[in-house]
Image 1 (cartoon, rainbow, N blue to C red):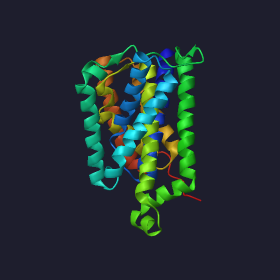
Image 2 (cartoon, helix red, strand yellow):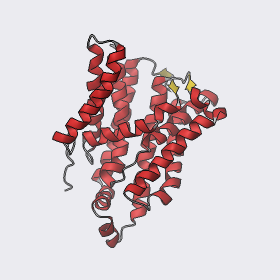
Image 3 (spheres, rainbow, N blue to C red):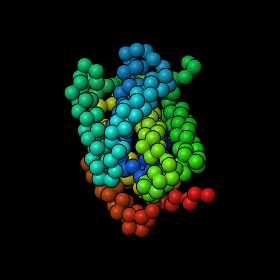
Amino acid sequence: MDYVLFVLILASLYAILAVSLNLLVGLTGLVSIAHAGFMAIGAYATALLTMKAGANFFVAAGVGMGIAACVAAFLAVPTLKVTGDHYIIASFGFQVIIISVLLNWPALTNGPFGISGIPRPSLLGFTFAGYRSLLALAVVLAGLAGWVAWRIAASPFGAVLRAIREDEAAARSLGKDVTRFKVQVFVVGCALAALGGAFYAGVTSFIDPPSFDIHESIFILALVIIGGKGNILGSILGAFVLILLPETLKFLAVPSSIADPLRRILYGVLLMVFMRFLPAGLLRERPAR
């Protein structure tokens, strides 16, 4: 039962990350492969503040989100002026920088050895120590992230973002400050990614640089594409599908040495099947009213 609860916690965690990235990829058309880097900022900020400064988890997570938002704002102004393939390369460069900093600043991050013994989240004297309480917290955080993303998508601000995605030149011709809108949604999306990273640190009690490498960013992007770009509920559904389906191999009488490679193969097969038969994802984007 603990295993099932832990998998559901992971699915809820990745729902937060998928929803936050969908604001960029699905709603605005910004294909970023640096999302795990902002997730790392939230995770490391939370770990360091709770362990070295004795801060409460939620306070530390808020600080991590603030740091991620500031870094995103600093990076957004120069990088968001480029589009298409150039922006993807720019986001990849930031991902490489983040991993390099984590690996080569041992005084702060403990380098490749990571940080262990991270305390579990606590609130008003209650510690989310068990998997049931952690799942409840995960559902609340995923619901909060989904609500924020839904409010953005349903607002006039979201309508402008969709206009930028469809035709940036036309949006500019209507007097919209395209760069400002891109920066704002980029900051919000990266702050929500940091929230996911903070929760990841609190759940696993251990973080290291490989946990946030380029493969993680690509996996989060796959969740968005399979769930349905531009559909917030689709991101949540995509996270649960790609996390839960491969885990069914755990219940087969297959050695772990075989099950782990099979799980990776299943990820690839699922991606190909979805792209062939459901190119728009599990849930299509609803037309704006």
